Length: 222
Image 1 (cartoon, rainbow, N blue to C red):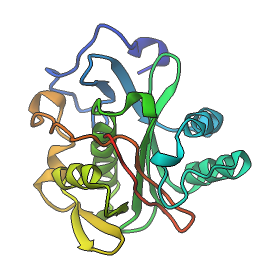
Image 2 (tube, one colour):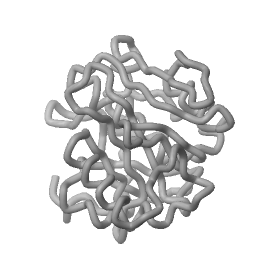
Image 3 (cartoon, rainbow, N blue to C red):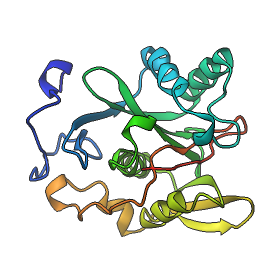
């Protein structure tokens, strides 16, 4: 599929049954407000655009100090994620509005992080990014995904539970794990027409984040 052939308006893939050539999950996505997005693998060339997206994330939407406030550190953090992780972005006609990654890429149980631009919270973009990274990790033979989320971020925790993550450590920064050896991991790779209806997230779209130590999670509106 080429850049020019995807388009961002007028299509809805909800009835598509896929082909043998399809990716692990359909890259086309229509959010809860009817806007169309393309979810694709990130490239090194996306570093500056991602850094711009993260510059718009306020202190209230940061977790464990991520994304970094300092512009230079933020750029380095983005470049490290792109170099060491499996990255997917949500792209519109003018900008990147979401980013999910797991890292390190070869780990059996890597950490996952997901962020959505504040102007696009509560539209299902973060939830779809999470489904995409689960599909990609299962396709790559990973055994599980884990993330960290602040205990007070109940909306994010509720969404992660719907996505199959379970709490395994209930500290201040809760650790949640999503096993990839069950039917849910298989179902997220089904073509759109065969997928269950999307869960309606209760306000979570800012994210789970790769910390300096690896990848953490601080979502507010998936």
